[in-house]
Image 1 (spheres, rainbow, N blue to C red):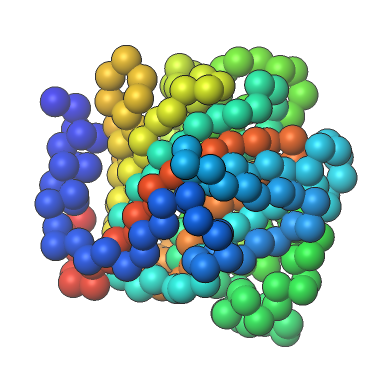
Image 2: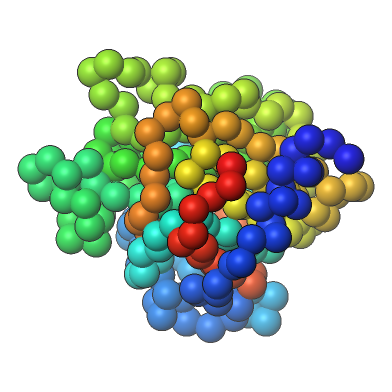
Length: 249
C-alpha cells in the first residue's frame, strides 16, 4: 500500500457529515450559481453536462460553477467525472474554500461580486480570490499532447509571489486517466494540512497527496468547478462532506 493511499484511508475514516448531495440529474440552480454566459448546462439520467463556450482565446467562454453554500472545516468532495471533449488542451479546475481577498470590491463573500465575473477571466480568480486550486483532466494550451497533469495551487498571486510561485508540491504528470467517454470517480479530502485524492475508473485506483503546511491554511469558503473554453464534461453524484473537529494531519 502506498503512503498516499495510507494517508487517504486514514482521513477517509474521519467522522464526515454530509453537507450537500446533488445527483446531477435535476436543475443545477438549486445548489449552484454560474460565472460565464457562454456556457450551457443540461441534465439527463446520466448526470449534468457542463459545456464551456466554443471560442478559444475569448475569456467569456470560460465557466465556473459555484456552490450556493459555503463550507467550513475539513472537506471531502466526491463526484463522477466523464470527459466529453476530445481536444488535448486546456484544463478543468476544482476550487476549495474560496473567498474574495477582502480588498475593495473583492469582499470575502464571492457571491456579492459575481457581476464582476460575468466575464470569467482567469486572472480575476488567481488575483482576487483566496482559495486552493486543483487542476485535473488538464492539458497544455498549445501542442495537443495527450500527456495530462494534476496540479495544486494556492491563490492569490501577490507582490511577493508570482503565478509560477503559487504551485503547491509536485505536479502529477501522465496519469493515463481522463480518457474521453470513460467515467472516473474522484474523491478529494482537504484538511488544514493535507490534500488527498483518490481516483477510480482506470486500471487500478490512483492516489496522490499534497502537504499544505507550506502555504496559508484555507478553512472556510465555497466550492467551485471551473472549465476553460472548449471543455465539455459530465458530472454526477456530487457529495460534499464536512468535519469541523481538529485534523489529525
